[in-house]
Structure formats: structure tokens, C-alpha cells
Image 1: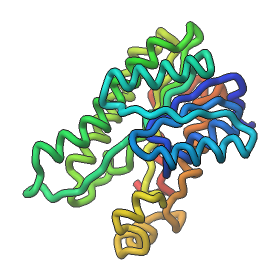
Image 2 (image 1 turned 45 degrees about the horizontal axis):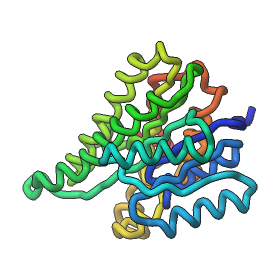
Image 3 (image 1 turned 90 degrees about the horizontal axis):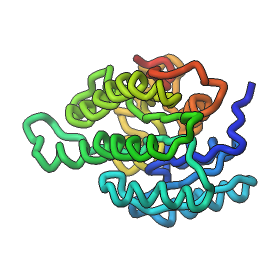
Image 4 (image 1 turned 90 degrees about the vertical axis):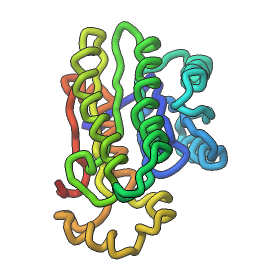
Length: 250
């Protein structure tokens, strides 16, 4: 059974590239109208919108930082102005920066918690205001690192561990409003970010592939398909779940 999102409206934060763009395209292909949120990469966001339009979908790009309440309100206001409703929120916007414990600073900590945790709370708070009486679907993008330790990722991993707890808690808190809250935890995924970080074709990538039962790292569409399922009515009885999409690595 393929997921149908006809008539639904989705906001995907941090969707100008990588996993976010993959999710936006997948939701649009399933019939949703999509808000492609970005902070600074307008070119990437416009490209994603253009690709969605070329494929017969509907999307707009909206600039705004999830760390700022006024920007979050603007993102939702633009969604309502363009499409009249909001049904799905994908909290994908994230920031990562690796550092050994000896070098951690308050700035390092704040940068990641502001985007990865506070941003999720702000966007979720706003979504709850605008979902209809029929409820909605919130999908948080976590990470394998919340369960499997990797060196030099203690703060980043802590933000993703917080998302695990946020998901479980809000699934219970928002259930009376018919709002489902789930989390998808990717393993390593081939994106612009992994290339920029020097991970592509590195020893770390080779070791990760060797440790992955399915024998490869992920692609954005691998994550996007799981998110699209959770967004739709096929997952109407699913909430509070943490789905690891990492090719069998745990």
C-alpha cells in the first residue's frame, strides 16, 4: 500500500539540502503540498521547490530559523497563506559539530541545543496551534548516535537523546488532540554535509559500511520513505515510535 497525502500540507524544517530535501520531495510525490524551510541556503531551497514542481508537486520555500519564535511563526503563517492548513511537521533542521570532551565550550553546546532541541520545541509548539481538530503528524529526525556511542560526539549525541525523550513524552501529551509524534533515527547518510565534513570516502565511512549489515551507507530517500509512511494515514495507529533507519546497524 503506497502512502497517499493528497490534500495534506507539510512543513519540513532545514529542507534546502540532504535528508530534508529528500523528505520534502517524497512528501510531495505522495501528494502533499510542502513548505521547504531554510535558514541561509535560498539557492538550495529554490532548487528543491523547482524539482518538486517539475515532478508535478506543489511547494514553496520559506526562510526562517527554528531557533527564533518570530521566524517559526512566519514559517507557519506562510504555509497557511499559501495552502490554508498544516497537517504534518517534520523537525529535520539540525546542526552538528564534533569535538572531544576536553575541547567542549559553552558556544559549542549552545549552537547544537538551540537548533536541535529548542528549535524542535518551538516548531512543535506552533504546529499544535495550527493543526485541525483531526490532529496531525509530527516526525522528529533523530540519530543513531543517541543509542550508539561515537567518539567526539557527546554534545550532538545528547541533543539527539533529548529528541528521543521529547518524542516519547509528546506522543502521550498530544494524543488527546489526535496528534501523533514519532521519530526516525538515521545512521550515516550520504549528503552534502558528510562530503563537507570529509566523511565521504574516508576510513570512517569504510568502517561504517563494514559494520552495517546491509553493506552501504544510507541515501536521503531511504529516510524519506520512512518519514512519508509516518506522515500518512497508513500510520494512523503509530505514535511514540523510534524507528532506526541505519541498514541494520544498532
